[in-house]
Amino acid sequence: MSTVRTFKKDAARVASDLNHRRIIQFNMSKYDAAVCAGKERYDNLKLAKETASSIKDNVMERLPHFLETFEINAINNGTEVRWAENSTDLIEQLSHILQVEETKMLVKSKSMVTEEVELNYHLENIGIKSVETDLGEFIVQEAGEKPYHIVTPAMHKSKQDIADLFHERYQIAKDLTAEELTGFVRNLLRTKFIHADVGITGANFLCANEGVVAVTENEGNALLSASFPKLHIVITGIEKVIPSIEQLPLFWPLLAAHGTGQQLTVYSNLFFGPKKADEIDGPERMIVFLLDNKRSEIYTDKSIQKSLKCIRCGACLNACPVYKNIGGYSYATTYSGPIGSVLSPHFKNFGEYNHLSFASSLCGKCEEVCPVKIPLTNMLLYNRQAAQEYQTVVDRSVNTILYKVLSSRILMNVFGGWIKNNLLTMVRNNTIGKQKKLSPFAAKTFNQQWKKHIKR
Image (cartoon, rainbow, N blue to C red):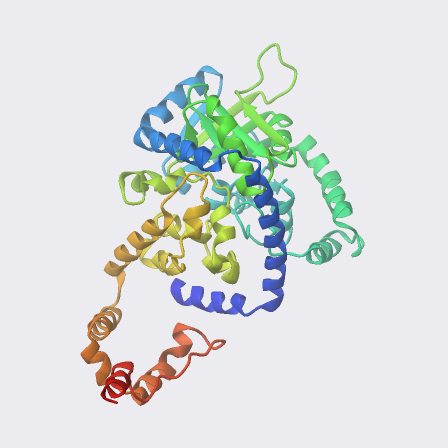
C-alpha cells in the first residue's frame, strides 16, 4: 500500500477512535492550561519571540560559520567532533566506536535525532542494548512503539494503559498510582546508569563561542546518561547551533514555556567536554556527532530554510486541529504535526511523503504559537506547489477540470443539483470519510433562484 493510502487509512481510523480522542483531549487540556500559565509569566512575550527569531535568522544566514566555530571550540575543550552526512554514515561511524569500546549496553536520554536515524534498531542488530531513560521514551520502548509526540512520547497512553503494560512486562500490581509507577521505573533505571558502558544524549542547543552542548530536561536522566558512563556521545542535527551561552537565558525559558508551561525545566545541563585531570565526575571521553541528513539541502532552499529554526518545543503540534484528530502515528515519520509536515517530506522521499503537507487546515495557529516565528503556512503551501511535479496523469487531469469548472460560474451552473449530488456520493468516502455528511445540493443553483427572485 502506498504511503498516502496508508496515511489516509490510519488517519481515518484514529480520528474515529473515541477512546484515543478522550485520552488526547485530556492530556492536551493539561498542556494547554500549563502553557497558558507559563506564557503569562512573560512581561513581553512578543518581544522575546521576536528576539529569539532574529537570533535564529542570524544563525541561518551564517550557519557554516557557527558550526565551524563550535567545532573549533569543542575540540579545544577536549571533545571529539565528527560529521555525519546521513543516517547510514552516522550508524557506521557510531557502530565502529561502540564495537571498539566493546559496548554491551548503553543508556540514552530523549533525542528525536536518534529516532530519526532509528538508532535503537541498528544497535540491536549489532548486539547492543539501548535503554531509553526518559520516562515517556521508556514507556513506548517497552510497548514496542515509537514516540507519539516530540516532547511527550507517551501522550497517547492513559495511566491505566501504562500500569497494564508494566504489569505485563514486570508483573507489578495494576492499581499503582502514577507516583508509584514512576518510582518503579526510577529504581529500575538506577542500575542501568551504573552498569552502562556508554551514554548517549541529544542536544537542545550547541553554543558555538564556547563549544558547549546544552541539554534541558525534567528527570535528570540526561545528566546521568552523560556523567556515569566513561563515554558520552552526543548526536544532534547541525541546525541546533546558536552563537553563545549568552542566548540560553532567552531560549531555555521559551522552550520550557511552550513545551511544558514551566518557567524553566528542572535540569539545565551544560556539557563542556570530558572531565579534566582535576575533576572527579564526568566521562573520560566525549564525542559530538553533527548530523546533516538532508539539512544542507533544506538550508540551501530559501523557501523552507527557516524551518531549521525549530527548537522542538512541540507547540505547533499541540495547536494543530489536524494533529489533535489524527494523532502522531498517522504521519508515519519521526516528526509529526505542522513542522513535521514541512520537514519530513524533505528528510525522506518527497515523492512519497509530500501528502503530509496537505494534512493541514492552514488555519495559521501553528505559526501563531511558534516561539521562533517560523512561517509554517507559507512553507506548507510551498511544499504543496512542489508536490504537483509528482501528481499522476489522472490527478492532473482531475485538478485541471476542477479548476476550470470552479473558476467559471457558467460551467458550474451547467450541472444541476441531481448530477452534483450523484458525483458527491461517488467521491464522498475518499474526500470527507464515512463519518461525516454534507448537505445535498439544491435542484436549482443560487444564480437561478436569485434571478427568479429578482423578476418577482
